[in-house]
Image 1 (tube, rainbow, N blue to C red):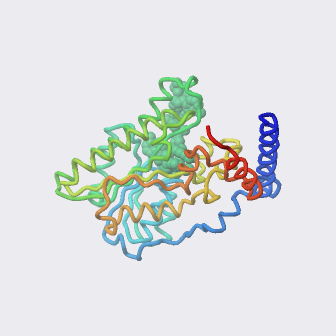
Image 2 (image 1 turned 180 degrees about the vertical axis):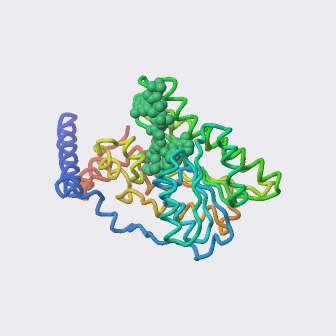
Image 3 (image 1 turned 90 degrees about the vertical axis):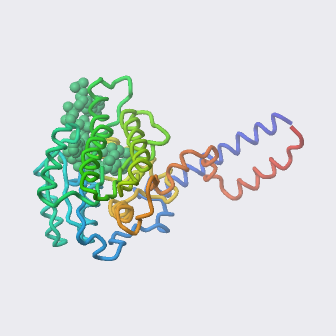
Length: 333
Ligand SMILES: CCC/C=C/C=C/C(=O)SCCNC(=O)CCNC(=O)[C@H](O)C(C)(C)COP(=O)(O)OP(=O)(O)OC[C@H]1O[C@@H](n2cnc3c(N)ncnc32)[C@H](O)[C@@H]1OP(=O)(O)O
Ligand SMILES: NC(=O)C1=CN([C@@H]2O[C@H](COP(=O)(O)OP(=O)(O)OC[C@H]3O[C@@H](n4cnc5c(N)ncnc54)[C@H](OP(=O)(O)O)[C@@H]3O)[C@@H](O)[C@H]2O)C=CC1
């Protein structure tokens, strides 16, 4: 009897495996498709979601605003009327982005060079911002550094570099602006971009995971402490969104992208415009009651990775009939 059940279970497992493989190759393999078919249910909308003028007369600082997601956030805020300041190390990249966005939106985008790892540079950058636009109403801490690397290969300086950009950089920008805003009795919305593994931790990106977790603790703590000064602090945890900066350092060969998409229940990567709309909402007065929030924005990837039995998605209805019959036949323990 036991042998019959084991034999049947083995055959079932083989059937399940081979149908899962067929399904995978129908969805992605042979066609070269980069999204699951369910992605058709979840088309990304690219236009700005908030009413035009939502950020009129508002100043927004976006660190790392010259590229990737920061650039998309800058474009959306600028389109909605904000005067933006983008800050990072590469002035030429910032200036190009600033010109491109302001020529499209008609609203000024300023480029300010700043290495967020250096508290003195941050202080000088804030001096420059005060002179250009006054203190900002919206601060988005988006700048980051990251690369995949087995932890046993990390040098002390590799660890320091990532934690300096992500945790110390966010802290320097937030504290410098926070102090000046408090002195000037001006309220502001602070937003930090972390990632879904800030919560779970993740191998192979350990400095980033540790630093992003620190950023989340910083923002939740300040949400509690600085509400009395008119400051809100929120966090967006993005799942994978293709940008050159992230994917060239996290998936340099492109080999992991398909696996990423396979485990995302909505069947596709996010888009920069989607996260830009969310960031704009969180930073806007429509969200003035939102503080201390941690918003996971990942197409369902986090819960999909977490659930013990989620792999059973690949079991077909016929296979379920068989499984159910086997389960129902079991009597006692
Ligand atoms: C998919 C879903 C979840 C995704 C999450 C994504 C999270 C992200 O944060 S993506 C953002 C990615 N964008 C960036 O990283 C942009 C900025 N990055 C950089 O500028 C560089 O990559 C770097 C972070 C390395 C900083 O550059 P910098 O010039 O300041 O540093 P280096 O002098 O080059 O390096 C400093 C030490 O780190 C060691 N190192 C650099 N790269 C690697 C690597 N790939 N593997 C191992 N170690 C590395 C480098 O050797 C230096 O250490 P040492 O030799 O001991 O001096
Ligand atoms: N794309 C994705 O799938 C995901 C991204 N994220 C997060 O989204 C944010 C944006 O990432 P993404 O757009 O993908 O990647 P990018 O590499 O395009 O963006 C990172 C930005 O940070 C800036 N930066 C890096 N180091 C410093 C520094 N020392 N001082 C100031 N600025 C710095 C870079 O500009 P410069 O080189 O000019 O300094 C760059 O513009 C990051 O916080 C990242 O952790 C989170 C989860 C997923």
